[in-house]
Image 1 (tube, rainbow, N blue to C red):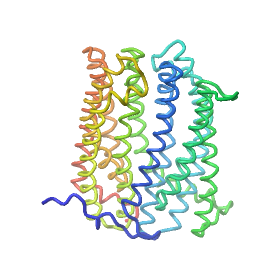
Image 2: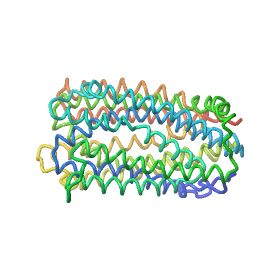
Image 3: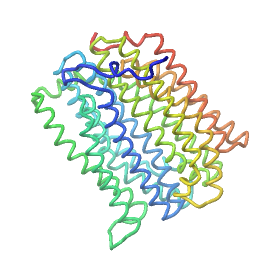
Image 4: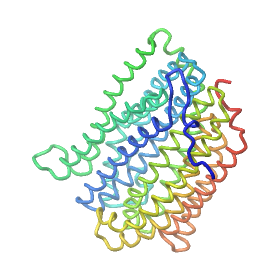
Length: 459
């Protein structure tokens, strides 16, 4: 009988103590769930306002996600470098990497925030939206981007806590941020009393206010963490440390960032392709994406947890345990993804009815949920295999595969099947499934080759 779960594979000893997969996965899942729930709450409340507002905010958020990928370069790189050093019991380089990531990430995100806000209108025009939807999308995007550095710094600090095996801290702060955001959204949309924020712009300001509050709390907790580890920030040498440690951070972060950026840009392009089909198609995509993302969150949380543990194991030279842990978690993820996406399809229509009563959207959305079962099956491979390769420090191969697949399969086939062949959203979803399958299979065989074992940063 094949053993599905071996708990001995899910434990690793580090300088921070004993780390377990469940101890990492649960906080990862809760944080991602809460972050996605915030988006669902926004969409749900905006649906009372209008479907056009949903389309505007959803479209702007798609582009915002692409910008956020720029910021993830530093956070991802820092996480891998810190994990490998902690696995090798090298505490000082790990702390230096954390501080250098914050310094460079802060400066970089400030520059990107200013540039993205200044070009809000041209960016939104690229999405093939027009009229009131375009105006609302521009408003939302400009306000959010002007202060997007808040989210960038929050993300980097969150990555640092996770690398140190303390994901519960970011979960607690995320919970508070979500509750504050939900409360503010309620006041903006339903106006139980005279509230100074209104409509789409009000929702954007709610996002900024909640992130600013969360960042303040996270910054204070990070100072406490570094102080407890004996780290002292020497202003005379901080930039020297920055120049020294940012090199390995960027070395592993940039390929992963390029891969994520390519994927997000391709998703933005496919959204613009869907816009050619019509505004109803965009609203349908947004509603369906809000539902299927809960399946995505589960697999991605397990993938990120696996990545973190493999980073520690690779730093400690325990490659066989890392190899077997990957295969075990892959089996679990595939079973969960297929089961949950099937349940989502069976109960999809009532769930979609929570957002809209448009019969055209309900019919199209139900069909997409059926096709999405295949998307989630192959996405399970990507969640585990791609994150495992990154955790081991093997970042160039996934980058090349991702770029080729996203553009040749996802974007090109979305246009050919969705627009040229007249299949609409169904054609786009078929293209998404083929993209996930191509990337997932390639990552799987790369892991099986064990070439990643030569990429450990501390060996």
